[in-house]
Image 1 (cartoon, rainbow, N blue to C red):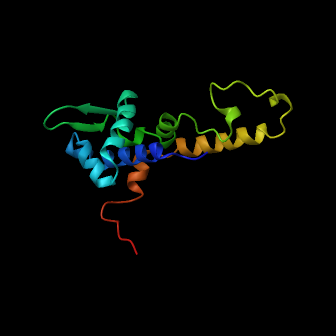
Image 2: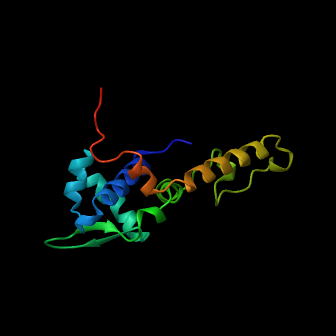
Image 3: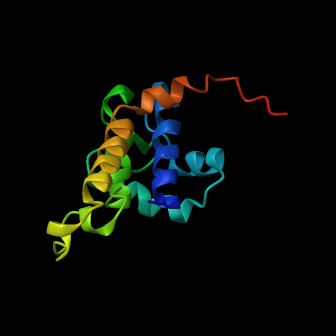
Amino acid sequence: MLISTKGRYALRIMIDLAEHQAEGYIPLKEVAQRQDISEKYLESIIKLLVKAGLLSGLRGKGGGYKLTKDPNLYSVGGILRLTEESLAPVACLEGGNVPCPRMAECRTISMWRGLDKVISDYLNNITVADLVKSHPEGDDYVI
């Protein structure tokens, strides 16, 4: 499992909007500048997040994007499953795939299922709010 830039950037967008939620709707341009990500690329990710109901958007002056729920209600697992489509460690565990013809005699399937459960449980128990708290504002000193 390798998380793409789409998944990583979606998390960064969600964290950024959570950190600035008191400001109301945040223009995409501001998020792109703060995160140093192409505004054009963020547009495609934002569309996905809006369509899934994670964000709401407002056009025109004073418009932008904001979270639709409290940051505590967004799991990292849910966001990554939305953007990555699957977090399965092997193809035979991905939803919608044709079942592996060797599954009945596969000696490793239980191991892969266990790993899949560990990954899901771990990511489902981390929220956007947790990620915001893990880096308090002003705590950006780097050596």
